Image (cartoon, rainbow, N blue to C red; front, side, top):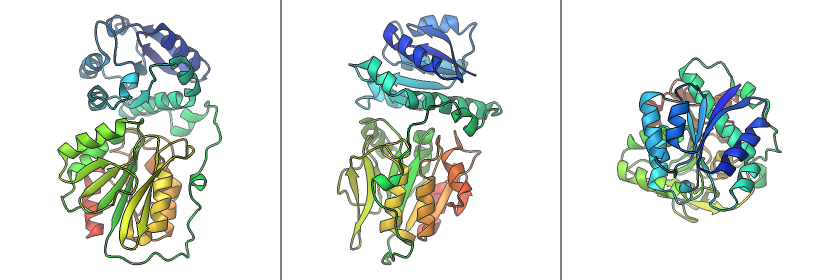
Length: 361
């Protein structure tokens, strides 16, 4: 049973989240609080596994509370706030201070949104719980964590583009291209990876599961830290050396090729593997348009998005790298790719950049 505390100044949000979690067989809401000061008093006697936290609250903001919590009594935190809507600095700070997941809460129609997003919310809490147990001897494996969720039909990349023909030949080129997929724990993992890349690194496209509008600020922050140029992908952006494109939240991003030019297509479409953007969609497009000229990287994350796409890349001759279990926050996505024999190498986070450059050179 996953014990949850909800900290939000809205009584409607607290009640709605409590009702959603009460319908899950593996959740128990052990406490709620209208602001962080009330929560601090309750935490003296309560021991939640996961905290759901708003950012904008009276008396103390959620970011300050998160920073204090992580420095004294670390507990996995899922941010559920309208302040991620515009990719605010506060949301970026939340990830830096250790928030496991971000859920974008609208300013209007919040109750209905939470009810419609119940599966995503439950998955986020489970991912946070798995991150906690990884540090303290994981006792709940990925399959057990997902048993009680009411699963909606999970669409594959077929809804965006047809599966590539393994007999289809991709024209040779001297230029390599790198595609990367990440989810839970990926914001920090991507920072580590990208900071290690040289200025002449191969062109790269990344899908990080992240709310709409948050990806722009995330890309801008990375751009200030890295030698390579990092930006949120826009339709028809060229994929060139020294440039990293981050798929925008709520849009699928595909790699395309015209002659020797690689570029991206940013488009709408249904959820694939319950995500938009989807790693499977990006990886399938790389298998189609780059083939053996591609390098695939799958990093820390909950679920299996990207595993099938990476297998398709492998079948088309791409070289694939998976992050190892020890350096992952949640060893879900890489583990699923490894199970399918889609990864050519399994390395630690700190070694991924080196392996990418070694293969591309």
